[in-house]
Amino acid sequence: MPDLSIIIPAYNEAARLPAFLAHVQAWAQADGRDIEIIVVNDGSSDDTANLAAQAGARVISLERNSGKGAAVRRGMLDATGRWRLFADADGATQMTELAALEQAIAKGAEIAIASREGKGTVVQASALRRFLGRWFNRAVRMGAVKGIRDTQCGFKLFATERAVGLFRAAKEDGFAFDVEVLYLAQKQGIPIAEVPVNWTEIPGSKVRLARDGWRMLRAVKRIRQRWKAGHYGQADKPAPGVQGDLR
Image (tube, rainbow, N blue to C red; front, side, top):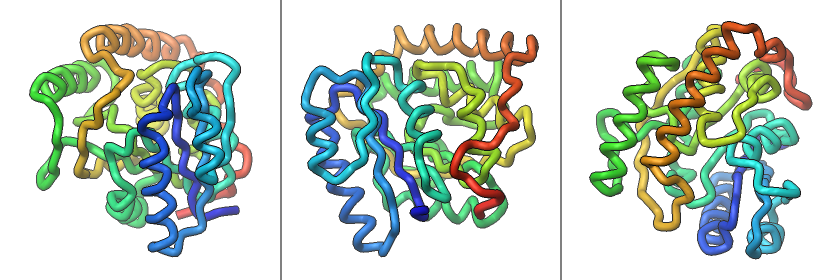
């Protein structure tokens, strides 16, 4: 069992993924980390899968493009690491930020999430992206996840059996999967720490903020309805390969 699994969802990421994988490998070697890298190839039509395999990652290929949430869920539940990190393929958040998330786990959190909001962060992004991102997160705080300023940053660490087990119950296949997992965590009283990080916008994002923002807000409504109807009955069951409190 490696100390850390790094799950990277990838859809047509041949242009951006190799640089991030090289960064991950260099970071792990310098830090003396025992890791596994899992790239979930989400039905890509380019050379994503081959490039990931050449870089030493374990590749899980979905037969068709199923969505970022579906890819992350598959990777989380197939991973074998004691702790499991979801990271975006573009490398907008570098692995050097992981230490701050691990410190939050050491202080009692079971889930530590990177945040582009908060004192001391350096965020390089367009003004439009910052505005729409903050608008979306404000709406999410009002409708579902309370007290978290940035639910969508693609760098989240899950460090206990019940935290990883949330993915067994999760149902959102699209970009709203972060909201769903954090919503379920709060409903179950799983401690979440929001950790400010540095973040750089990398050209080539698959997110279309105006279009996908509205889709995610509709997803928030679905998530709340599912919870009220009792459709998340598996949320408290353990994920395979995770043993006990691993902090």
